[in-house]
Image: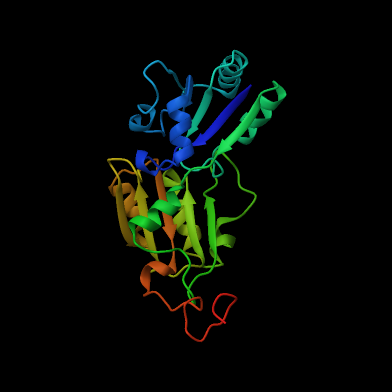
Length: 246
């Protein structure tokens, strides 16, 4: 008796891991977040696979669906967007499944932050500019033990999830430490056919969000690396010696 919790990546079926693809194709039951997982990925399941959308379900409704089918010996895949380790709400699912005597295996996926860097042909850490990446959100219905302005004080690459509806508050907090012209990548529906990416200074982050009517599935990446040329790393410098290049 096992449930596979699988990261579906940011949306593009070609960015699924090989293991995720195989598990989806083998599934007897596909339990998926239909508000976040695109139809093209769900369509990879067999025609006779039972598909169960979950956007309208509570945890109390979701768990029995998976438990009953796992106990019946069916191959159950719980499909979630992105990488399940980031704002995936899987801890409560794992706990409930374990309490029901059902084992869990997690298959990680590619996160939207990685795809954003790929689309922008950059990396989020550059020598002499930024060596730290912070993943966070703006407090809303879910409270935060951390303060967004305190995190902004590091002036690291900061990825802001689940914050489009609170973008005015987020911008005000970020501007307490980032300069007004710090570049922001505003990434909407990464990996979907509707994907769009804008680059704007921090002062225009909220205005652009409202103008484009972005209310969900939007990732903001605030980073000094977006405004500079790549620096030289030590790794490939001829004067840098290491184990494989003495």
